[in-house]
Amino acid sequence: MIKLIKQSLLTVCCFTFSLAFAQEVSITNSLPASASAGQAIDAKYNLTKSPTMGSFAKFQVDLPAGFTAESVEIKGGNFTFENNRVKIVWVSLPPDASFDFVFKMTAPSTASGNITFAPQFFYLENNVKKEYAVPPASINFGGDGASVAATTDNTTSTTTDNTTS
Image (cartoon, helix red, strand yellow):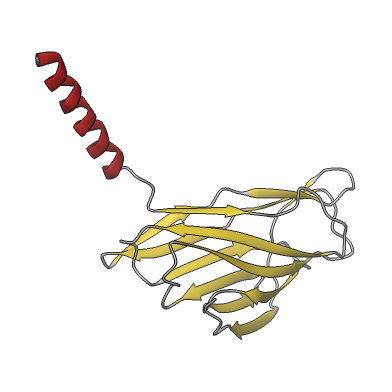
């Protein structure tokens, strides 16, 4: 009997602990492992959120100099590309627990080596700003395999997507 009580108590504690430290958000990508210089690439991400997550959120990623970006399917977000930074801001996130969003990035014809993209995701929970470190992803553009650091220029474009599907 005491053994059963201990096991039950341990199970309840483990469950409570897992809820307390459960990941509020998860973002995965479907970027290719390699691409050609000058190629347009669909940068597809999947966002999984919990029901307690607030409605405001922002995804951003810096692209290296010479890259361009444009909106494809951003699920009602506001897309901007300025100073080589892609930003997607949702004033109201889609109600789905999980959804995909896509933007197109085009590498310059001079792109070479392994380029790492390290997005950031910010959101509100109970009116408190939180950040989720999106796992970085690399694309190899051939060449000598040297890494390319993201730098900025003054390119600007803005798109608002009112699609909610």
